Length: 309
Image 1 (cartoon, rainbow, N blue to C red):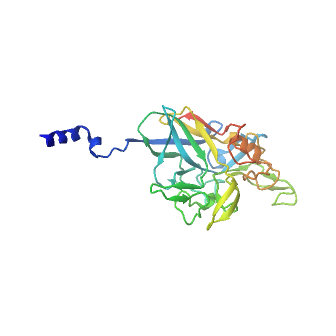
Image 2: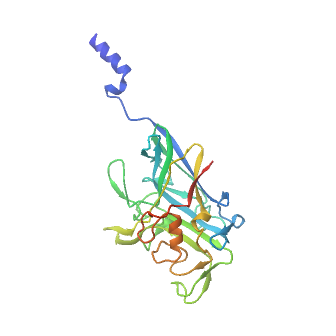
Image 3: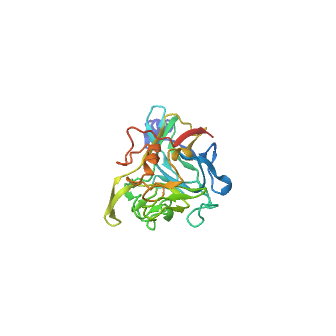
């Protein structure tokens, strides 16, 4: 009789009798978009973007890719909950590579990819979620399910798998990843002013770029790297419904205070250098302190926003 009672108790209360008591999960898809002037930003001359920057220039997109990591949803209790990312060609190691270029027009077929990737997919514990938070960029390390620490941002592209194995998203001179690679081909070109590394006199070049990544980096593959300026932008929205809304990168907002027809000094456009005259406005737009590489205490990011699907 006792045996029957015990058996019936286990049937009624499976979790109390050694069954799998892991919390139920729900699938989630976080849709992203890159837009300009109310339309999707796309490669190709027919998709030129007008009114860009402080001098209202017209430009073609030349590249538009960025990494997202540390993706979390905010539940109805105000708690941050990690999104466990699905593993695919654009997602692994807690990192996703979002890709809005299609290797047409000014977007290079040699370094780009015809296939877009615009949504991050994963799972969270079943619940109600009202907000979202993420990092623009790739962290130095990630701990896998077995507890092993894996080098990410400064890993060799030939020694790691997707999405960190993309050579064109690697930053060889800094020994790390380009967190964001957003490039423009302005109509009429870019005046590369005298005294920049590429010219001893004013010259016209074709591109103005934003390459975000960690700077002040020292080290080697064998010993590891350290960087004085992590340059990891943090983005959070307290109100976000993944079923009805998407996260938009507003391309004009990124360069709203920049003149994309001129390169005043250093590398073309902004490549995250602390003395680069093109970088202060870009870093302000991303809510980053250019001198420290940390989240700004005085500027709030204006590049990402929430919109209805």
